[in-house]
Image: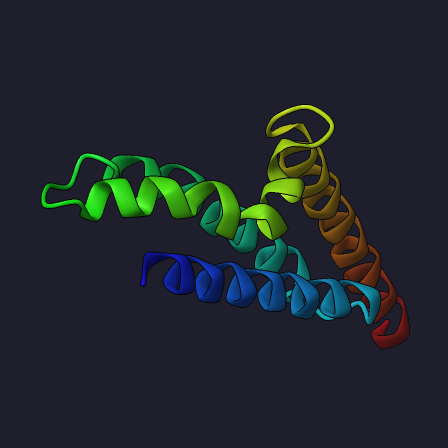
Length: 114
């Protein structure tokens, strides 16, 4: 049961990542926030199953066994090539780019209005 639950959560997170990526490609206004929120969720999900390993009645052992197999899709986003380096750098770049694009849009809007 825990394998399927973790697989479903991983599939959901990957779908959210695809949606955030499409938002970035189409330059949607909320894309940097969506991207940052995705990586916060993904990082929390990386640590949460480890906390559940301590649950009694074999549930913790089941979660521990499923964690290594069910999280292969999302693990690549967090741990390759250096643990947590990709999320940190990509989120910083996206937020900086989003702020710069926001400043450019506001400058163009003031030029058109004025």
